[in-house]
Structure formats: structure tokens, C-alpha cells
Image 1 (cartoon, rainbow, N blue to C red):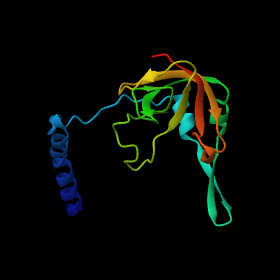
Image 2: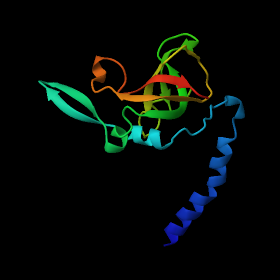
Image 3: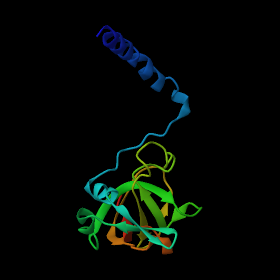
Image 4: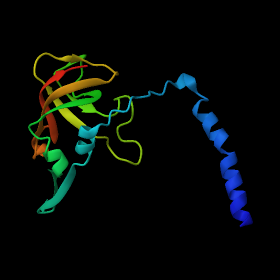
Length: 160
């Protein structure tokens, strides 16, 4: 019991030092972001992959849970951050993510954040590090290995 009390005292006494480390380097300009998750993103995040084999080769096929299937061919609005697929300032086709492109997409223990591929109906959008909002029709791509993302928003317009 004495060891547990000592452990707890040491653990809680180190909290101010950990908090001090967070604000210790303001000049590093670590990008912050606005949380983008909403019910549509949460449904997208539930997409899984079915693993099958063709000979010795693993084949990953997307499976869409009922909550996500209900959104197929429906008009949805998604807030998010533009992730370019090509170089340049303006983009007609790009990925939309819940995290900014300046943050590591593969860091942390939760894996890759949900993303969808956006196809603008008309014109293009300039790259920005600020969040944007997209409105368009959700479409599924059951064979992403043949090109394009598993989930797409087509005939999209930027509304924010």
C-alpha cells in the first residue's frame, strides 16, 4: 500500500512538468486544427476491408457498413482539409481529410484518418490550409486498386 501511495504521489507531482513542456516551445508553430468529425465522417470511418486471396496474393475489398451504405447516392456535406493529389495551387480533384495536410497522416496509434476523394462539378479550388466544406453526391468505388478512392464525392461544390 505504501508503494502505491508513493507511486501516485510521484505520478501526480509530474503533471505540472508535462504541461509545462507543451507550452515551452511556442516558436515551433505546431499546426493546430479544428475538429471536423461529424455523423457523415463517423460513418465513413467505419468502412472496413474484406481480405481474400487470389493465389498467394492478398486482395483487400472495401466493405461498407449499413450506416455508410445509407449515404450512397445521397447528397452530403463534409467539412475537412484539402489534401492535393497533384502539384499546383488549384485543384479540381483532391482528397478531403479530417486532419490538415501539414500534420502527419500516419502518426499516432489510430491509423490513417478517414479521407474521401472529391471531384468538383465546375471550376477548381485553391489550396488552403484552412478547413473547407464540400457538398456533393457520395459514390462508392468497390475496386480501388483499379484507381481512385473507396469513397468519392462527385459533382461537388465548395460551400465554405
